[in-house]
Length: 114
Image (cartoon, rainbow, N blue to C red; front, side, top):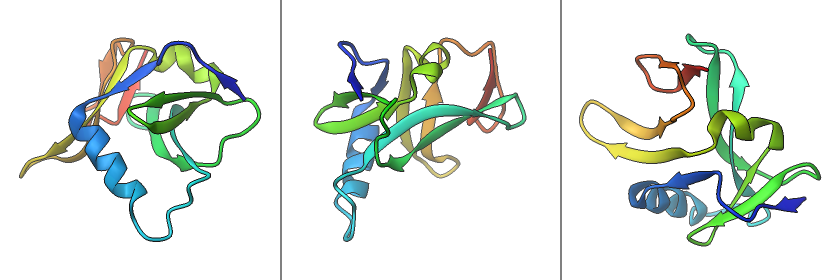
């Protein structure tokens, strides 16, 4: 596991609160970190990954406001500079992604192409 010197992504204050709330749930495994990444699929070609997992030997680790985060180093070129936000409105509730590397984004905001 490698520790990065600068954070490849950022979390807004709303996203930080939402993630901390999830980490305080009963039964949360404190050995897990917040995985931020991408996978193939979705209506625009790639889909964002955001969830808790146990870090693997190839993962890069970093911390945002005390939240342990991990990424697969091969995903960094797709998400570097991305901001994760939490929306809590009537029409949109959940995590959203603002990715400067995306050339196009689908209507739901969870899929993109480069």
